[in-house]
Structure formats: C-alpha cells, structure tokens
Length: 304
Image (cartoon, rainbow, N blue to C red; front, side):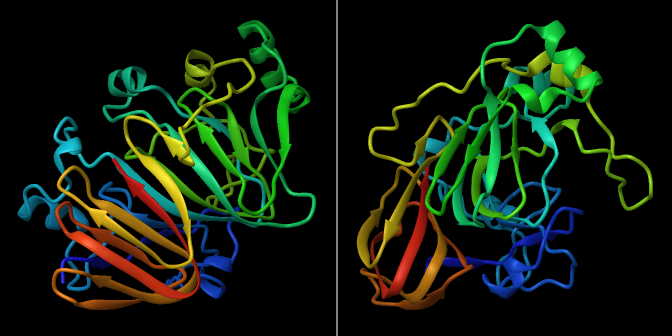
C-alpha cells in the first residue's frame, strides 16, 4: 500500500496539557504533551515511518513522491502539528523567508490554525487592533502594555486563522489546534508573562528581531477561493464524513484525522488501512483514486 501512517515527534513545552494523549491517542512519555509534529521533515522534530526510518529518508529514496508542485522547493515545504495549549503561549512572531534565510539560515514561517477544541471564553491574539508606530511597539514591550493594543479574538471549534509571516500572534489557554505551516522552526518571542523555563531562568526573548519583522497592523482579510487556507506552501481543506478523492502527480496528500474512525481504501489495488482520530496519513503523489469511509469522520487535507 502506498499510503503511509506517520508517527510524530513530540514536545513538552511548559504551556502544554494532556489532551493530545487522552483525546487524540498520541503516544508519548512526555509530560506535558504540548505538541505532536504529525507531518515533519524538520531536524528539530521529524516524523517516522512504521519501520523507524524518518519521513525525510523516505522522501530521499522515493523521487517524485512529493509531486511536481514541490519541485520548486529545495526542501519539503510543509510541517503539520497538533497543539494543546493548557496555558497561554508566548506572544510571538515569525519572520519572512528573506529575513530568516539571512539571519537564521532556514526559511521563514507562514502558518494557519484550525481550532479543534476551545473552552468557553477562550481567545487568541491575532495582530493589532490598529496600526502603531515602531517606537510605540517597542515602548509597550518595555512597559508591559503590549496586550492593550493586541487584537484579542474569541475562538470556537471550527474557526480558522491564516497567519502570514510577520503577524504577531499567540494561542491562549484552553485551545487545541491543528497547525499547518511552512517547514520552519524560527520563532521570535516578544512577551512571555515573566515565566521561568525548566532551568529556572526567564525564557529568552527576541525583541530586536521582533522589532525588525513584525507587521504593526490589524490582520488583513484573505480570499482562499473556498479553501480553509491557501498560499505558495500549502492548500488546506476540512473534509467531513466519507469522501472520494484523487491524489495525482502534482502533489502529495496529507490527511490529519481530527475526529472519528474509518477506513482509507486505495482504488487501484483495493488495499485498505484503518484510520482513527489523531492519525497522520501521507499519500505520495500519483497514488491515484482513494476513498475514505467511516463514522463521524473529519479530516484536514493538505496539498501543495
């Protein structure tokens, strides 16, 4: 069978909870279980095949598996995560490709969030309420009044947010999201509520870099032509219930199973794979027609 079930790398950042383990079946000995990198070639957290090899090793030995749309990229363009925020994440920003390549020697980060769970009253920070000058931005960071000018958005299950590089943001407590992003791990932390890291010291901030790259304005409306999100690096759709689809030569297909259970069947061979909530499935480009059937299913489908 061409379809591959991937095993994630996991992270135990101090703001995480336990829902990825208890609600999504992610197996890890980490506590807290903050993130699961479900589709990743990044060296900071690769995904694995059932035989223990890395997803990057699979790509290296299967030319063409990413599809013709990925030929323009020097590396796998996407990273997909599940994130459980039991506590507020830091207020942060990600740089553009140009800035990140010059200063960090990797790509920048545009991303999107699809809200899987949100406790009553949950909200997140998403850009500014109004445009501000760089001098005001720096002053508010220094005098701890930055949140006074941030766009605090109430969130509910099923909400989606597109976050271009340069957009200040923060997931806040009581939220679980699926995140589809560029293949990058560059984050500039602006404000962290004076928290201490595992070493007992305040976590590092990146104020000069944030001042360089942050768009100091409200987020702009986007038209994704019927998709949840779309950019040069990914096109994302939420698919509910059973469905039929074709994974052609232009792009791989990634399926994150967000709810329910069922079966994925490849049409050409008739081979089937049981699927359930919390799984990451990779269909190489050219897999062809396939069908997903099951009970109470919801999947996040990503292509390039």
